[in-house]
Image 1 (cartoon, rainbow, N blue to C red):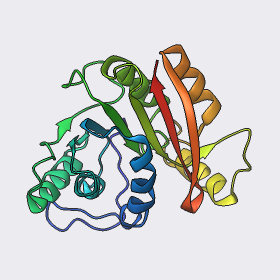
Image 2 (cartoon, rainbow, N blue to C red; image 1 turned 60 degrees about the horizontal axis):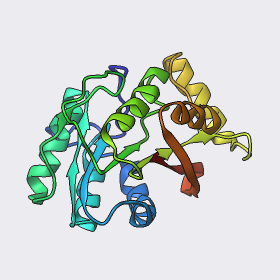
Image 3 (cartoon, helix red, strand yellow; image 1 turned 90 degrees about the horizontal axis):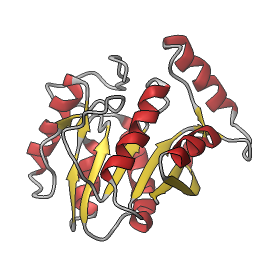
Image 4 (cartoon, helix red, strand yellow; image 1 turned 90 degrees about the vertical axis):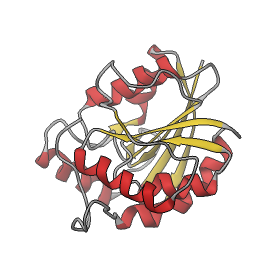
Length: 210
C-alpha cells in the first residue's frame, strides 16, 4: 500500500478517530451479522484508526479479531483503542502489507477489508486476494466495504468526483470495478457471492474461498 493515509481528524496522542468510521460501523455490522462465521478468527486488513475492530469485537464477542495495518500511526492508534477497550477477543495489531506475499499469519476463518482497495495500488487489491486464497479454508468469507464501480449499477456523481480526487492524489489509487475484482478473484479460487448497497453510495462485497 501507499505510505499516504487519510485521517479525518487531527491526532490526539496515539488514538485517532475517523468520523466516517463512526457513521458506517453499525450498517457494516448488520451485514457482518449475516456473512461472518459464528466463531473463529477474523483478520481485518488495513484496520486504520482501530475504531471498527473495537466495535465489531464488542458486537461479535464469540469471534476473535486480528487487526492489522502497514502504517505506524495506524498501528499505534489501533493499539490505543485496543488498550482502552480491554476486550479479550482483540489481538495485538500486526504489520501486514497487503501487496506482499509475506503475511505474519497463516490462517483465518474470515478476512475483512474496509476502505482499502481504492486508497492503495491495484497490486494491493490483488495481494489481498492472494492472501485470502492462502489463508481461508473452502467456504470461508472475504468481505469488503467501500465505494465501487459496476457495469450493472449507475455511479453516483459524488463517487466519480471522489475517484478523480483519489487519482489526483496518487495515479495508482481510484475506485475499482466490481467486475475486474471478481475476475481476479476467480483466478485465485475465490467466488463472488453477493453485493449489498450501503449508505453514502458504498457497497459491501462477499466472496468465498472455493
